[in-house]
Length: 257
Image (tube, rainbow, N blue to C red; front, side, top):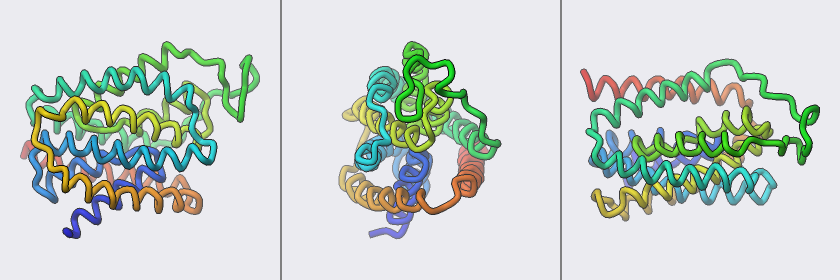
């Protein structure tokens, strides 16, 4: 078994376990540059790997009460529609555009990780229903629109979109961070399965490599969930953001230089 697969799989799982996001941002470049998988196949396989890993990790969070099923259903349903459409668009999109957009998405994610944490809306004072620390007086139409938009991005460039979902759940839904991470994982799993279905049959997929990568990533996700309980969140976010900048810059240099 390649050291590259072990390293990339563990990194994928650890990021999903800690942040509820970031899996595809590791998986796609690893498949592309470490394992020499064709670009469109790498995007499709990344979606499948993240779908399985996020499902297992989301179940762990659900058992701890950190998954909001109502928001998962709304965001996830419209996210699936957007992701499937984005995957079909991704099949005909030139690779250079896909990877260029992917790098820009990584820079955006890095910015979100490195900037000071925003003060999200106060919950409880103006809400008609506040349950378990979050406000249930929500605009589900706005959540649905955000689900479609993130879903399209997921399908086209092969990212789960968790780094966009987590801030949205905190800002739009008033969820505490732990619930936002758990709910994000459940949404990422749904959307990634939809994206993989959109690519399946249209591009070559190495299912053996996917199975090995996924098994290692699941192990990493368990470790990531344990680490998240003990390491300072701000330190982890800054480290993740800096790593994203490095990887995005490498992709742009590799493709355009």
